[in-house]
Image (tube, rainbow, N blue to C red; front, side, top):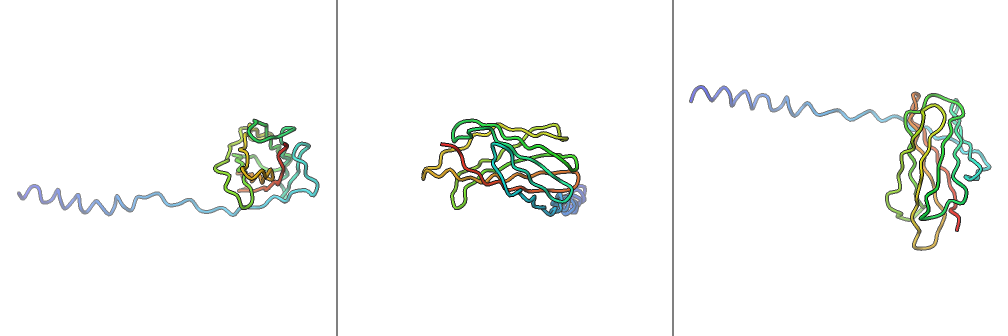
Length: 149
């Protein structure tokens, strides 16, 4: 009986150590908004910038619901991009989960093929929220657009 007691105490004493080994949450990095240039037609390209970062977003011609279309983000100036995601939504509508990761060379071009659902109310006005992680930080760009009919 005496030989088991120290083992139980050691196990109980080790418990708080195991509980305190949880991974600390990553520090939140402030998100910098990219300013969209005044004239923006996604089929021709929309430019956006923030101090030393400039990008251009281009959607495939004739982007339509339920039909795949290309989305491209081109880095014009700035630090190396580590990842790019884009989430699509409609104001005051629940359109489900429409988030895509773009794939690219981290230096200049990021691409994805997107398929968006049809809105039951017939709306075609969308907002694309691009999130860019660069060696300098986290940037966000909001691009409003309308799908073709």
